[in-house]
Length: 91
View 1 (tube, rainbow, N blue to C red):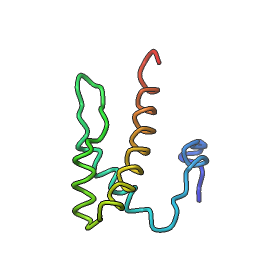
View 2 (cartoon, helix red, strand yellow):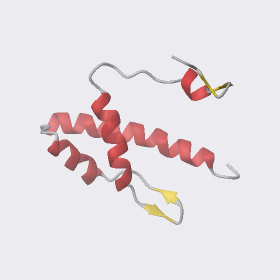
View 3 (tube, rainbow, N blue to C red):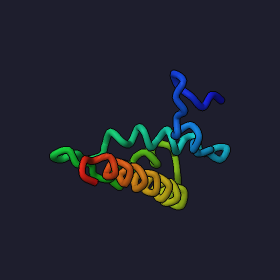
């Protein structure tokens, strides 16, 4: 894997997380669900619970799997929202 872009080292590529086999669908769902998050005056809210559970239902998950899926999406979303907050001027 190339760790540079245009001659510049890209920290995100050096620190790139690896997904466990079979979890790519969670990562893909996170990006689909991101469009459901509320945005008000430039602030991004968390992905709504109902959106996550609707996605899980569409994937044919039972209650236990859907709760596990929600926990993974919520953990990813919390990290993303923390990162967004750090990008704000004056943070």
